[in-house]
Each structure stands twice: as structure tokens, then as C-alpha cells.
Length: 349
Image (cartoon, rainbow, N blue to C red):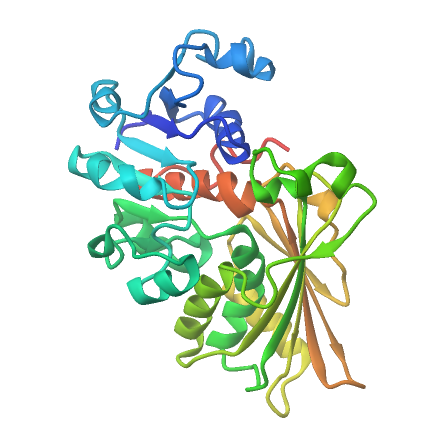
């Protein structure tokens, strides 16, 4: 592709969409040519989001309806789908048929199995033929496949925070067979930009609660990717928590290690796997990551420790759920697809 690629954002009015706009408007190699929203059609981008006044094309570019022919006419080469789960799939095939590559932030194409999708999302997948083509796009794990793909399924926010620490250790064969236990906390933006009583300020502030226990939808993709890394099924308990912050995810993983495996070996496996990866920051043994250091960025910070009394390895990670957990990772994948610098548009911290 050229030094400048024309891009469209479908679903540009949600939290992930807004973050995508922030990143793409300042990306040195992205030319934003279309933004869609049924409710905002005809309204200038900066009129709806005044923070973008005077930035790039924000004052002149207007929202349109998400019509494939209209998007094709703009010359868009890549479309980011920041749409709700179950909605992205309605547009993906038409965009692909029009020759537009798709980077999807929803869960519509993350699973390889239509049966697994139905189990966790309670309906048949509308386009099962596309599941085998879609690439589960964790950049640090599947870069070569992402570079060649035309349908990119960006991982979910919780899965990213869980897979980054675990995949290298499973691939290295360091973990024992005991079930993994994961506790994750997320800011309220993870639920999306919608009217909902449980997400009102007065409901969230000064309160922490679990939800979707014991079967959060993200368990499906976490299990899929852990099984691929390990070469066998991996048992996992996952408990998510809502905490009174806007954004940020803090994940703690409890795992067993095989006899004789040391904390140094854990660190070496992580260092080797993520050598040269700019967005995974390994803090080291007995170092606890903090969400305040990653919010607004595309970084994942990872620490680890060993509890000798309990015989458990403790893995800790933090990320921004709408950054590395969504829009930042989507732009990182965009850079891979287009052959741009991995950090292009993502180091403004």
C-alpha cells in the first residue's frame, strides 16, 4: 500500500469509535475519508465531538449512514468496524466484496467455530463461511497472518490482558495442568456508550461488583487461543469485576508451574517471546503494574511473582480497555496490514 491509506470508521460514536478517531486523525499514514453513524448522519465530526475541532478533517468531514456503496465511493481501502456485537457481521461481507479490508473490533469474527459462537452468543452465526478466513489478531502473536489478512478480528479487552502473559508460558511448556484462575477489573467504559441504569455514575461510583459469572462471553475466545498455544484444552475460571473508573483493566492470573520451573525461567520465556515488541512492557519479577501508567496508551504492562507457600505463579497485567484492549490494538493491526512502522500513530502519550 501507499504511504497514505484511506480509512473509514463505522460506528464512530461509541467509546471505541471515538478513540479510533482520536488516533486516526493524528496518524501520519491514515487519511480519514468516512465516519458513519445512523443517528448523527449529516453532522460534522467536530460538531458532535468538540475535542476534535481544528484537528485534521474533523471540521469538514460529516457523518454518513453506513452504506457500502457510499463508503466505496469515498475510496476507502480499510474499514474499521467499531460496531456492537452482532452488527459488524452485517457489513463485513459487503465491504470485503467491495474490495475494502476489514478491521473488526467486535466479537463477530473472533471464534473459529460457529458452534462455539452459538454457545456463547445465543444465536447462529450469520456468516460462518467467514470464520475460517478471519485472523484473530493479537499482533505480538500472529503478525505474519495479520499482514496478509483482509478480515481482521481484534481481540477483546479482557482476553488481551489474559493472553499476553499466558501464551508465552504455555508455548514454552512451563505451566502445570491445574486449572487457571483469573480475576480481572475493568472501568465502566468497557460496557460501551449506552444508556443503562447499572452504569450510571451513582450506581458505579464507590462500588465494585462482579458480573457475568461464571460464563463471561470472552471465555470463548480466551479458551480458544490458550488451547492453540498449549496444544491441548486449558481449564480456566474467569471472574470479571466492574470498578468505578472510566477505563483501564487490571488482571491477576493464578497458575501452577511444572516441577522444577523457576521464576527466572518464567521471566526468560516472557523476555524471549516479547523481544522487540514495543507495546508489551515487562516490569520484572515481584513488580506490580498500575493502570494509571497505561490508560490513554497502547501499552500492556506485565509483572509476575511466585507464592511458594501456595505453590502458585501469579501473573499481573494492566492495559487500557479502549486502547490496547480495542482501538489502539486495531490501529496496531492497521500498521501491520499496511507495512507502516508498528508504533505509527500510537506513541502520543
